[in-house]
Image (cartoon, rainbow, N blue to C red):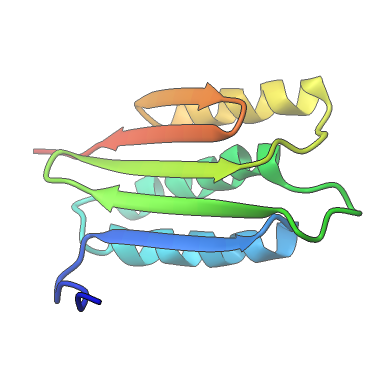
Length: 124
């Protein structure tokens, strides 16, 4: 096993698909944002975007086995936030509102059934 790089700019976390665990992903995002030139309000927006994007994967009350995988990659010009999971049963109206919030807070959004990719461009 290769030891992690000293100054890794990638964070990967997998948590149960339960609302209470989303705070762990938000904390991981906060940590990687400290390595970026983003302002405090932009970081707050990204935490909101991650929460809203993850809400589509939050399991119904009975599925304790579902998980959400978060990958945060910090490049020189952007921050990529990738989420993977099994879609939950959120009503269509909630999904539309979550998508609108995500689109308002990041620069690019790609959503499909089991994946969400959010991209925030960094200032030069």
